[in-house]
Length: 131
Image 1: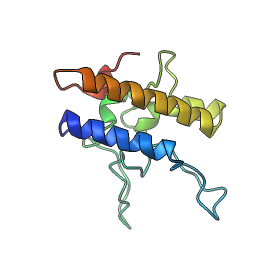
Image 2: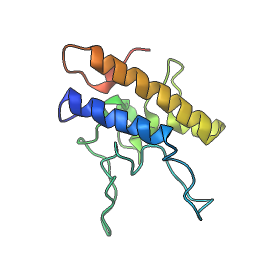
Image 3: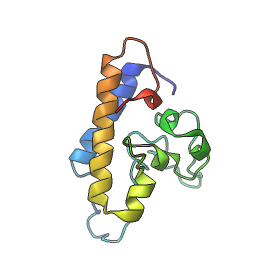
Image 4: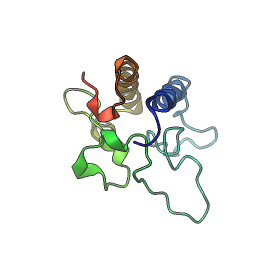
C-alpha cells in the first residue's frame, strides 16, 4: 500500500461511514442495480470512473495488501480479502447470504483493521490484522 498509515485509517473510516450510512443500498429507481462491495467506493482506486477507460485494480489500491496472492489478479481482488478467522470473503458471503450479511462482516473487518492500525507503532499493511 502506498501512502501513510494515517491516510489509510482515514480512508477505511470513510468506507465504514459509507456502509453505515447506507451507501451500498439500492439506488433510487434502480432496484436491480448491482452495487458490489468496495467497487467505486471511496476506498476503491476506480472510484472516479473515467469514461472509455477500463476499471482495473493495481498496486496503488489501499486494499490490495490484504488480498491473498492467489487472488490479486481477480477482476475484483478486494472481494477475496479474508474478513474473519473462518476465511469468509465478500465473494463467498455474497454467494451464500444476502447483502446485509456481507456488509455486516465488512463492517466488523473494517473496525478491527482500523483499531489494529491505530494501535501499531510501526506502519503496517492491512494484511497484518489479527482477529
